[in-house]
Length: 386
Image (cartoon, rainbow, N blue to C red; front, side, top):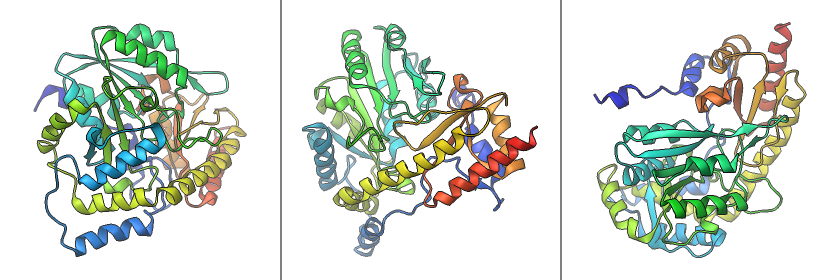
């Protein structure tokens, strides 16, 4: 076994979840997914595909009609994007790993903006890359901010890849258009690739915008930019493992070869479900976003009212990321909340050491009453601490 793999840190989120598995009295908000099932029309498309016997291999890059549909969907949000730049992947995680495999050699330098979902730091390490991090910083109200000049100084001609997740898991931080332009211009000058995880782009609550600012809005097709997406969040399809990549045209054929050596292809019936999701995007995604906004607006003020909580209203994503002041190690705290309060939330230090003392609460809940009950459990636990 490679030492790099042996040295990978286990997921602290899973560690907390494992402490609560088997207990039906735990309210679980630890994973980044809604508890609402995939819409019926999407599920039925997969059922119909299986009934037709579509159980064979597909093209490495995905069904042509799905690549066309993804290109049309992305073009509607960001301007023209050709289907020749699209690869269908077996989930957003697979999309990100494929990007790292395509761009990083052992010994290369990658820079990641943190705190962030731990896979985005681990995946370059799997490739043998050296990862440096540039941390967001929370302000007095608990909103996390980017020191743009610090990030630009960290990205040099020696930096092969910059990894940015915005809207960000866990903080809800979102890049501004001006920040994106400065980052793109700088990476053009240094020759650095950008891997943009924009999985949460539709889960954006700033005014009436259809999505968060994207690098695709400002980059040319031949820029050193790879954007990873997923059907998981905006279409309630976490378990389907369906994602896609947008990349420069010259990269697409080699990416197809790489997919062959990873998964060969995404299954046809899940791709049929993805086609149905895109066909119903105008009704499904706005409803999901409106409900998530209601969840956010229910949970965040309730948490802000608790003693010792520092929390800002997130602009995007599906998480309330808050500091519980004076409680120490996040992992130990999250385990205590499972054991003593029946409350399952993710430890902040799972996303980077700079988030020690913070907790991530996924507010994607069908029943707003579950959020209320969770806050009551946390409030009761805090009261018992004296």
